[in-house]
Length: 89
Image 1 (cartoon, rainbow, N blue to C red):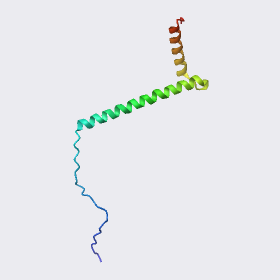
Image 2 (spheres, helix red, strand yellow):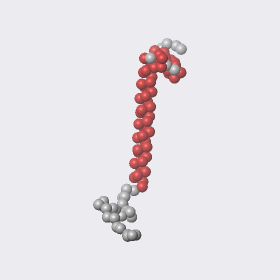
Image 3 (cartoon, one colour):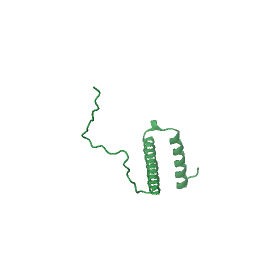
Image 4 (cartoon, rainbow, N blue to C red):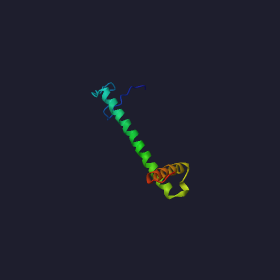
């Protein structure tokens, strides 16, 4: 009753020990990884600046969204404008 049966599949099976050669030098891979990381950082800073700009505009238009950062920014900008226009502090 204990017969050894060989199961044949329709799917082609590859050898596990096949080695794929990659001719890209490690230094080039490191350069690409560094470039990718720099691009990610610049994208994050761009998104942050864009979000800060939208937040500032919303705070100018809607007083209920104003907070401590708004008051600090408002004071700095007003002082700069007064100085540029020639009004004393």
